[in-house]
Length: 249
Image (cartoon, rainbow, N blue to C red; front, side):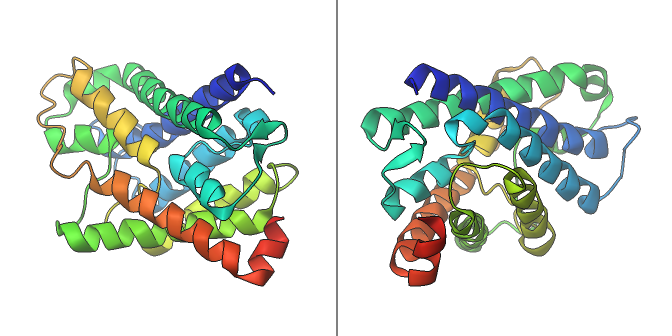
C-alpha cells in the first residue's frame, strides 16, 4: 500500500472522528442547540460513535486515527502498521501527519456546522471545550497521570484485538472509548489522543470565532504528552506479557 493511501485514509478517518466527536460536545455545550445540556453520558456515547465511524473510514491504513496508537504499535515491535505498510520512519510520520491534518479539518467542519450557535454562545470556555479538553481540577501532574492511564488502557486493549479492524473491530474500539470516558474521563475530559486535542485546538486558535477567548496553550501539552507516554507504555508492556503478545500477533 502506498503512503499516499495511508495518509488520505488517516486524514479522512481522523476528520470523521473529530467532526462527530467535537460535534457532540458542541451539541451539548453551545447555547440553543437541540442537545443543549445533554450531559456527559451523551458526550461519551457521541465520541464512541465518532470512533466507530472513524475506524471504518480509515480501515485501509489500519485505522490508527491516533498518534498514541501508532506509537504503541511501533514500541510493541510490530513489523507492519497495516497489511503492506512497513513500520519505518516514513510511514510513522505519514500516520502522524494524516492524523493531525484530519483532526484539524474535522474541527473546522464542526465549526461550520455550528457557526450560528458559536456566535450565540456567550461563554468562551464553552466554545473552547468543543475543540479541546480541559481539566475539572487543574493540576498538571495529576492531569498528566490521568491521561497516561486512560491512553494506556486504550492502546493496551487495542493490542489485544490483533490485526486490522474488521468485523466487530470498530464496534469493540468504540465501546472501549465509551468505557474509558465514563470510567476515567471525569478528571480531564479524556483526550487519549494527541491529534484529537491539538488539531482542534489549533483550529480554535485560527478560526474567526466570535468571542472565543484563549486557546489555553499552557495546558495544551498535557493531552499531547500524556497520551504519547500512555501509548508507549502500553506497547512496551504488551510486548513483554505473553498472553497479550500472543493475542496481538
